[in-house]
Length: 116
Ligand code: AMP
Image 1 (cartoon, protein in one colour):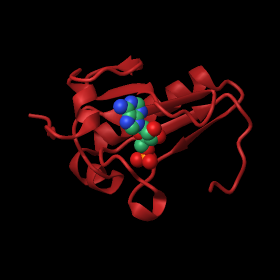
Image 2: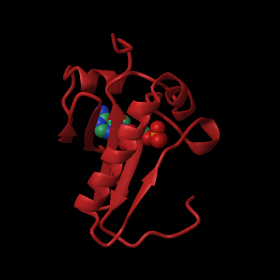
Image 3: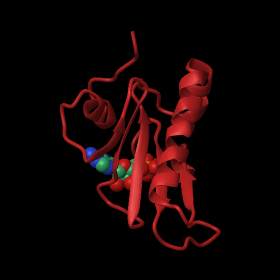
Image 4: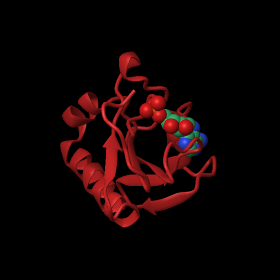
């Protein structure tokens, strides 16, 4: 059975216990609009299975990790025909605030580099 955390806010979105503005859902991922968007399109892609970090998930479920990236690129192409950015924050130094793996997909404006 897929791992889930009863207290995790993103697991609650997977279980539909709290609502989200979903743009994609299948067996392995859910994608929904970020509550605090940093670009005209800002979507989060999460695995339906709970894993805190990319490095854990690569060990635990590498096929689902690849599926998550495929979904992120599909959404990037859909929402950012002129280009898009995928960001995954892991750990305190990167500013991770929700400890359920997620890829940010940002599109709809020109991005700058380096990120803050
Ligand atoms: P990170 O800082 O990489 O952990 O990003 C967590 C992201 O989750 C932030 O951009 C938040 O705005 C977003 N977020 C937190 N709770 C929700 C929620 N219930 N629905 C949508 N986005 C959320």
